[in-house]
Each structure stands twice: as structure tokens, then as C-alpha cells.
Length: 377
Image (cartoon, rainbow, N blue to C red; front, side, top):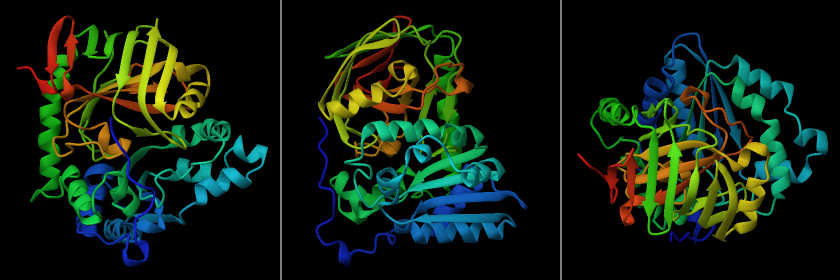
């Protein structure tokens, strides 16, 4: 079971959270040219916290150099929790017109995760969080090209049980920024994943087994997506949307994850005809139950993914990274991606991770594809 570090660094006043060994200009080039493919005249929305001012400024420069228009949104730490604490009912259940206009008008957007707190919404009523998430659905649907990425901060390093520079080096490897040509490295990963997609495409039944897992899913006719860093950076996964009523059996998720307000770990789910009929978490069970109560689609699966990024070799407490660990499989409760053929709709999309490296298998129509985290040739 994963363990999580403390919420704050020991001496934050001695740490510049925006300055790490990662070259912000190299980071900006990767986001602009690989993830967003910024073109002259485009409008590019950049969103992050004030803890990522250095990479945000580098992105701002890079967008301008490509003769596009950057729109920079820097938020102070804690502002999201502040919104939930002070918003009135109509503000929780709607989005502002200016936010919606930005999402509709932006040709591409990037959100850099750079938190100051391990759980920015800790202490916020989960019902309020669910209402806000549901109200933001039009924003998500309005986005065109988009990317979510990450920048090392002290709290992320603490959560991963690393020093800041050690964690920055870890993230650098995950982003392939340790390669002489990061874009070429991402192209190579895309080619490897294309071979995996070709093996998965004809399959009908996926069977996941570990000591505490025995789950069967139907993926027949669904589309597998090659996630090559365009939307998630880092990426390194292939995923699809399982048939909504096909999941039967039990699964144990042994990698801790951040819920919408609290940490959740040691999750056990039981499915009958696609629906979660029993659920328990060793840590954060109230958070799990609140998530399942989000709406009618929250108890059904929206995604099945397989991690392939060998640069991410251990859990860090960040789902963006952890779901890409080579040798793991993840299932998302809630909303499906339409491009997979999935039809489940929910304000929730929560990835939960099962580590097959600890003695597990993933089989396709009775034939083992992954054994103990390794692809079977």
C-alpha cells in the first residue's frame, strides 16, 4: 500500500518552488510544439498557480515567438478551496459566461498542475465539490485542443517522499526532458504503443487478476486510444471505454490516489453488470462514497487504461503520473471519452490504479498479455 508524505515542506521559506533543475524553456518547447502544436494567430490559454510562474512565463514567451496570442491565468494557492467556501448556490451550479467564453474561444489550452497543498480541497464538503464539477461540464465540452501537465513543487515532492531536486529529476525523466530530443522520444513511444493497440484492438474480453482481483470486462468493438503526450504530459498509456454493463467481479486498487478533497487508499470495488454494488476504502472511505454518489453515471466505468511509461517507476501520489506507470492498469469511475466509443456520462472521472507488477495478469480472450507487469511477447 502506498504511503503519503506530510502536507508541507519542513522549511518552505528556504525553497523557491518555481525553480528546479528542469529547464523551463525546454518544458515550454515541448508543450508548444508537441502537445499543443501552436500555430500563428491562435489563442492559447495557460492556467496554473503562482508556484509555476517560471514555466508559465517560458510558455508565454514561446507562444509569442510562434506569433500566437497567450492568455495567462495565474491563481494564488488556496483559491479553489476559497471558491467552495464562499460561493452561493447559483455559483456552485453554474459557470460564469466569461469562463465559458474563454473555453469556447481558445484554440488550445494548457493547465500546469503546481499545487501548494497535497489536498487543495481538504475540508470542503464533497457534495459542494460534486455540484461544482457537474456545473463545469460545459467548460470541459467546449475545450478544443488541450493539455494537462505538471511542475514540481515542494508538496508534490513531499507527497512522493522525495527531496525537491530528486522529484524534479523524476518528473524530468517522466516528461522525457532528459532525452537530447524529447519530441523524438515521444514519437518513439507512440510507435511502441501503436503495436500494443494493434494487439488489443481485436480483443473482446479483458480479464484482470491479482491476489485480491478477479474482474472481467467487455471491450469488443471499442476503440483503443494511443495516449502519446498530446493531452497528458507526461503520458504513456493506451486506453478505451469498456462496455458500460460488462464489468463483473472484484478489483483491489493498491496505489493511493487523491480524491476531490481527501486521500483515498486501499479501494475495493465489486461490480455486477457494470455497476459498483459494493465499495470500501481503507483510507478515505467517505470520500469514495461521496464520489460514487456524484450522479447516476458515477457507479459505472468510463475508462480502462494500461500504463507504459518506464520513466515513471513508482507511485508518487499524483494520478497524472501514477496511472502511466509501466506495468499498471487503471479503471476510471464515471465519464467516458466519446472517441473510445464509451457512452457513460458523469461529472466524475476518477482513475484508480492497480499494480500488476506485484503479481498480476491481464488477459485478452483467455490469453495472457501482461504478466507481473511485463508484456508477454
